[in-house]
Length: 183
Picture 1 (cartoon, rainbow, N blue to C red):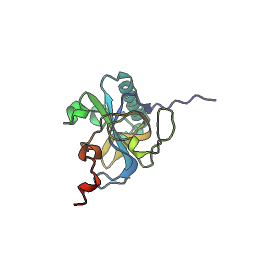
Picture 2: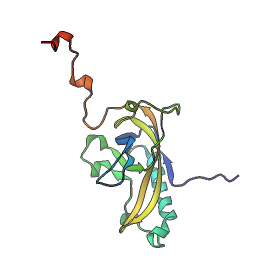
Picture 3: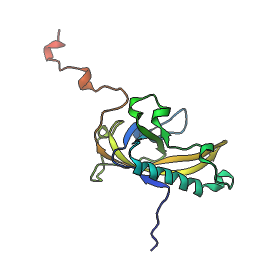
Picture 4: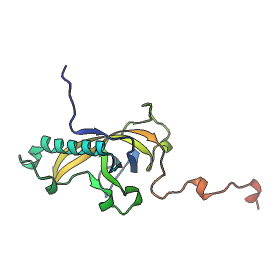
C-alpha cells in the first residue's frame, strides 16, 4: 500500500488562536455564498507551523500550474493566504502573528483535546486556542490568481481571552433580588 502524503494540508500548532470564528453556522461575507470560516492566528515564533504553511502554499502553486497558464508564477504576483498581522491589521490580537482566513462550504468537525465532539457551542469561540487543519489550493477566477485556504477540522486546545469586544452577561449585570423589580 502506497503511503500518500498530502503536501497541501497543514495541521497548525497548539498556540494557534481563532478569530472571527464562524464554525457553528455559515455566514455570508460581502454578499457571497454562506460559508463556515475562521481567521487563524499563528504566532510568528511558531516557525514549524509557518514553514509547513509556506511549503503547502508552494505545493499548491506547483499542483495548480495549469490554473496559472502552465507557468509557475512568482509568489509576489499572486494572492497568498499567509498574511502579516503586524502589517495588515490594526488589532492587538493580531500583533506578533501571521494570519490565514480559511473557509469551507461544509461544517468542520469540532473536537476537544481527546478528539471527542464538542456539542456546547459556547466552548469554541473567537479567542480560544485550537489546532486547525488547513488545505491550500490554487485558484484563477475573474482575473484573480493565487492560493486560497480551505477550512478542515478544529481541535480546541484551551480557553483564551475572548476576541471581538463582546462582554459576557456576568460582566454586564449584577444579581437582582426579587424585590428589586417588584416596585
